[in-house]
Length: 379
Image 1 (cartoon, rainbow, N blue to C red):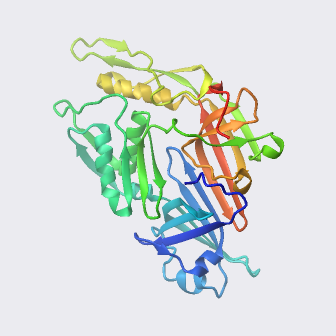
Image 2: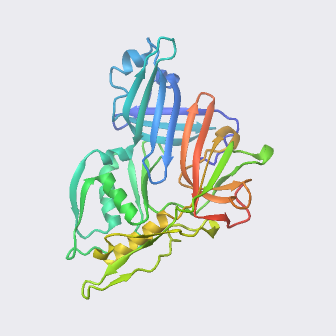
Image 3: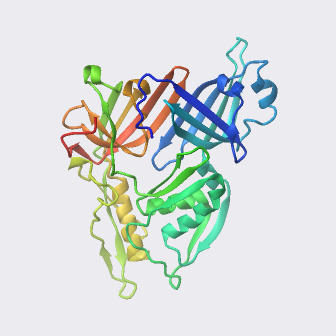
């Protein structure tokens, strides 16, 4: 969808609002839009900020603002259309509005800030029990409650089998749905996030491993003269980022404990670099001796995988110059930085900044090792 070339073609914004079901905003609202900033990060809640021109006699200040058009919990959907191909950038709820009034004509603004629809899962604390449900089953049951907002659940089975055993334990939730779903994700080395689209009003809630396989996006080129598509790229190798976690389990019959072997993280983190970074830290996980072996193994795998990315990169690009919209939570190739840091990366986060005549993206990349595994990347 977003592989459609941008070139120098126009980029159109479509804005919809409503309490639950949305509809296109009046033309005055789109005309008053000064800027839109949307941030999407793997494993975190996406956020947005929209700024509008608040003309004294305009429809926003006279009618829409007093009528509650931008009140908190109002749903907002923003899509960009490039050469007729639409891409939903955000589907979320307003949580805050700010009005800045100026004596200078044209300098008064309305700014609305919000978060994606996972905010709905973080508004109410609850206590619930889940007898005979494995972690993925608990997540699926929780997400089914939000189908009215067009949220479709995509839940992966955990890497380490954890069959429910009600005669030994019953799992409880104490807190918000979002907090519990994220807790289960961290315990299994997974992430949880909401992917808006592909159609306005629809989104996918993903609970599973970071998608580090599949087709790469069009490469980010730097230091390649006229072929450069990225304004700048900075890479860092943090030697203290990766850990070697240690976990012990106890035999309930003999009370003897044993150290679990180091897990293979490749099912969760398929290698993107040829030379893996060593783990300089060794950390003992607490409380694993009291857990069942499968739970302790899952926690050990999760900790090892989540700390694996010692290589990080950051940069910015102009969408018209790059020619494509960079998507978060997918893979992309890098060219022009040299042998050590060229190759494929996981796009950790993307911040879209859209203004009249301008579409910029700031992004962060990550991987677990140095030197590309392949001599070529997708152009």
